[in-house]
Amino acid sequence: MQRTKIKEILNSDPSIIIDKEYKVQGWVRTRRDSKNISFIALNDGSIINHLQIVVDHDKFDEVFLKKITTGSAIGVKGKILPSPAPKQPIELHADMIEIYGECPADEYPLQKKHHTLEFLREIAHLRPRTNTFGAIFRIRHNLSFGIHKFFNDKGFYYFHTPIITTSDCEGAGEMFRVTTLDLYNLPFTPEGKIDFTQDFFGKEASLTVSGQLEGELGALALGEIYTFGPTFRAENSNTTRHLAEFWMIEPEMAFYDLKDNMDLAEEFVKYLIKYLLDHNYEDLQFLNERYDKALLDRLNHVLDTPFERISYTDAVEILKNSKQNFEFPVYWGADLQSEHERYLVEKYYKKPVIIIDYPKEIKAFYMKSNDDGKTVRAMDVLVPRVGEIIGGSQREDDYDKLFKRIEESQVPIEDVWWYLETRKFGSAPHSGFGLGFERFMLFVTGMGNIRDVIPFPRSPKNIEF
Ligand code: 4AD
Ligand code: MG
Image (tube, rainbow, N blue to C red; front, side):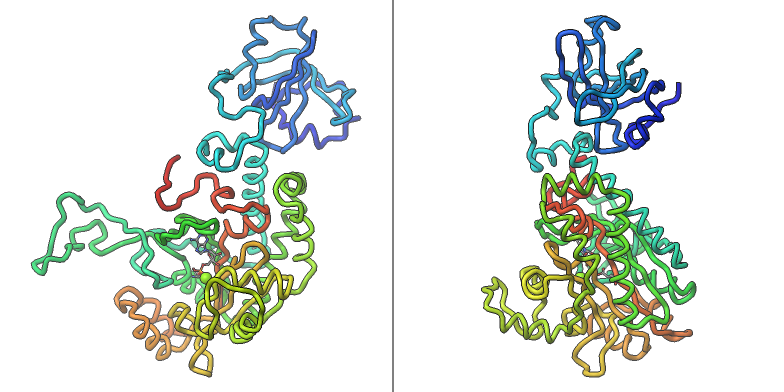
C-alpha cells in the first residue's frame, strides 16, 4: 500500500476519508496509554499537526508495542474513523504497525517537556523534529518557492553568479579565503610574499560576499535577472542578526532608476508576506501563539501600509531631534546603527521605512553619485523588529565617475576591470538590491535569533553539523 502524507489526510474532508484505509509513516511525538488502548501522536513533517493513531492492545504483541516510544520511526496501516476527542475530527485505527527505528527513551534528548532554543541549537541534528523548527523550515521552503515565483512571473531570469571569486563587492574586506596551498609549507616570492601564482586559481580567491557585480553583467544583457544563493561574510559580529553564511536574493534590472527599484522592493516584500499567509498559515499561527503574539497583526499591517520613503539627511534630523538616548551618536555622515533604524521604524513611523541618498563615504563604490557630490543613490529597507532587510542602489553607469570611485575606494582595478568595461560598451541606467533571506525569515517568523531560522547556522566559532 502507498504511503499517504499526514497533511493530505488532515486537510481532507472527513466525510470522504472516513472508513477508508491508509498507510502513514513518520515519527512518534507522544504516546499515551490507557488500559486497553494506546494513543500515538504521529508527525511526518508534512504539516505541523499530528495524526492520532489508536492502537488496540488486543491486536498487537505486548513486547512489540513497548518498543514504540517518543522519537521512534514507524509505519501504520489502518482505517480512518471519526474521533471522539474534540481536538481532531478523525483518527487512524491501526491494523498493522512497522517499526523502522527504535528510539531509546533514556537517551533521546527531545522529550515532551519544553526545551529552550539555546538547548535546541546544540542539537541542530534533531531540532527539525520539533514543532517550532518544523514550522520554520516549512516556511523557509515556501519563502524560497515564492521568491522564484515572484520573479519568474515577472519575466526575470534566474542568473547563477559564482561562489568563488576574486572581487570584494562590498569592499569591506570580510572575505573567507579559498586555497589549496599547503598551509604548513607555503610558497613565497623573492619579496617574501605568499606566491599565489602557485595556488589553485593562480590568484588569491575567496568566497563571495554578494553576487551583485556579476548580476549586473546579466542585467545588462538579459534585462531583468535575479540571483538566489549563499553568500559569506567573515565579519566578527556575534549578534542575533548576523551569520557568516547566509542566503541572499539579488535582483538587478536594466533601465530602472532608484524609484523603480524602491517600488519593486516594496512590491516584493508584500508579495512574499501574502504568499506565506496563503501557504503557511498554520505554521505562522503556531509561531504567533508560541513566540510572538503580535506576529500576524504585524504582517497584516505591513501588507496594508505604504512604506515611508525618506532621505538619509531627513532621517538624521529626526534622530537628532528625538528624545531617545542612543548608544551610538547621530551626526550627518555616521552609519545608522540598528538602534537608530528601529527607532525610525517602530517608534517614529510605525511602519517599514526606505532610506535613500546616503553619504558616499559609508556606501560601496558601485552606487550612482547624486548631483550634490556628497550622496549616492542608495536605498535601505527597514522593517520592525529587525531593522535593515534590504540594501540596494541605482548603479553608477558613467565610466569616468565609476573609475574615479573605484580609485577613491582603493578597489584593485585588476579585480574589477571587466565590471568597469560594461560602462564602456553599451552602458545603461540600472538598479538592484539584495534581500537577506534569513533577515526576512526573522521578520516573518517573529523569531529573535538568526541562528534559529536556518537549519545549520554558521557564526564565529560555530561550525558543528
Ligand atoms: O547591504 P548588503 O551588504 O548589500 C549587498 O551585499 C549588495 N551587494 C546588495 C545588492 O545591492 N545587490 O547586504 C544585503 C542584505 C542586507 O540588507 C541584510 O539583509 C543581509 O543582506 N545581510 C546579512 N544577513 C545575515 N548575516 C549577515 N552577516 C548579513 N550581511 C548582510
Ligand atoms: Mg547594507
